[in-house]
Amino acid sequence: MTRTVTKAIFPVAGLGTRFLPATKSVPKEIMTLVDRPLVQYAIDEARAAGIKEFIFVTSRGKGALEDYFDTAPQLEEELRRKNKTDLLKVLNETAMESGQIAYIRQHRALGLGHAVWCARRLIGDEPFAVILPDDVIAAEKPCLQQMVEAYQETGGNMVAAMQVPWDMTPSYGILDVDQVNGKMVKIQDMVEKPAENPPSNLAVIGRYILTPKILSALDSVQIGAGGEYQLTDAIAQQINGEGVHGYVFDGKRFDCGTKSGFLQATVAFGLARDELHDDLDFFLRGLYVDSDMG
Ligand code: G1P
Image (cartoon, rainbow, N blue to C red; front, side, top):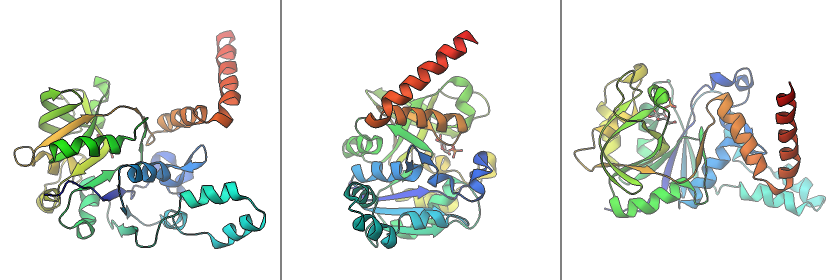
């Protein structure tokens, strides 16, 4: 069984209602952290991990996403004429080769498991990654790359894992840990959004490496938490088969599916930019002084 992972699914069909009214006309994945759309961070991470084929599961109203990955001949021509080579380079870094990227519509909002299932014919019989662009992870070595390397040893299925505050466990897929081996945890059960009695506070974060068996499990998975077909439930079925590992990644994760998480990521990624750091740092320190006085 090959352990090379070259395909990744990006489920981006969500309505983004938490960000209304902005998401009335802008897909959430195109909203920017500093100057790059959320989805660009996910693509960069996938590329670093060796992904060559990018499969987007979209929905109505996500046209801006397809345009984003298209070439922009007029803009490029204009930049060339004005000799703006630095900006041309920025554009080039976002370019996708024809045929590298595919879009599949999820016609009904039936959950993450259903979204992944929609891409089944493009995956075929090989392991694949799933990246949820809402989960933005700042790390020296990109999170999916860490996982792909660990996966060479384990095979099977792997999910990114992170401890969350106990009161947040009802918002996540939660892992029931069998054995801990450094950053790798062997899973004996997992449960999507437990309303009570979570087996731990180790949560699934939106990075997965999955075997194609997941796709057949999704054929028959029952409706789960929130009345949706859950990816977690299909993965849990593999625990006694090919196995499931959690990988406690190095890095800082931002939940850009929430306003607070998005703002935190904006500040953190802004501070990480040389050209913005000093200004922003000065401004933030000023805010603290003002609030101390206030
Ligand atoms: C999804 C998954 C959940 C996981 C979470 C991570 O939930 O279903 O298992 O813990 O992503 O962000 P969502 O946030 O889409 O409700």
